[in-house]
Length: 417
Image 1 (cartoon, rainbow, N blue to C red):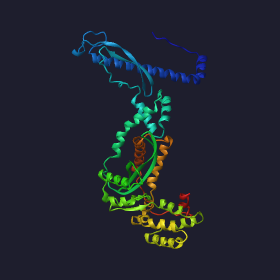
Image 2: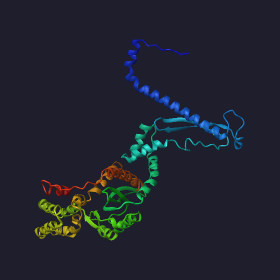
Image 3: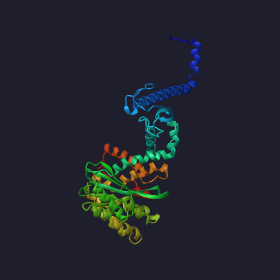
Image 4: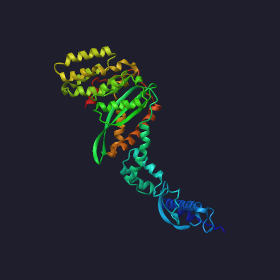
């Protein structure tokens, strides 16, 4: 029998007027219905699974399976399981009298859909702290995941990250950008500053890749040596490396030249300029910065050395410390001149790796403290892979002409300040 419900025009108008108030309730009723259907579906699947295990349907006496002839149903127990898109479902887990049945539909002891945990992990990797994700999860998924649960899921990612971090190097790389950046980590229940050493390679096709992320002391020559050896063990062709771009870390240049004898070192001019300017009184800093820029932006290596000679003559008596600082590093600061002119702007500084480090810092800033080395690798690997995807679509386009600034000293002076 079909029951027809007819509404007159006045009733329809009243219903339409109340729609804004009823909207949330309608959505809630829809959600309740969906959850009810899903719960009944799960209960039916679990009952069918038990029937298959026992070899007979409910109320059927004889089993089709010899081993289950003396085993019987033994009621059920309730469990709340949180499903992505539905929230908490109160399901009935059937039991057998011998206690041998174990459902394969819902993992043992599991209370949350793995997809929910993966979504929470994605939020964590994209910039939210574990505590923030914990608060958001209750609103989005109907259950508050503890920061411990999120950390556990994060640990499960570590194996894949480790495989990526130690992957074979199958391409040849002509340039290596080398640097290290510090993070605050919890190690052995203590808060410590830990440096992560970073190496970016530029391939023959001008694509960049993050070749190394390794915790270590960036002031230690032996640490850098081991890192370079690891790169070669993974397949990096040392003969293909032509240039290493780095700042003035202690012992790094010497180790690099020993491990890559066919390559030369390019000292980052920005870092070198900062070091020179720190030894310069503020009153003459603009004039010194102008002279530095004349050296670094010269049209040839010969002219750059000529400008350096002029710099020595002008400032040697008044600023001996600044002159000595520049003199000790001038050769490695001008090695970029030995490469194609359109590449000079990209090879003079460590800007390529500084931008990556800046992105690392931006991501970890909300956390303040990273929960250990493995957790740090997970975060940095996601950022690095994301950057590599961009680099793959956008290879380095070397500029064919050098820029000209209205104020020659402005760029270096601003970097110092």
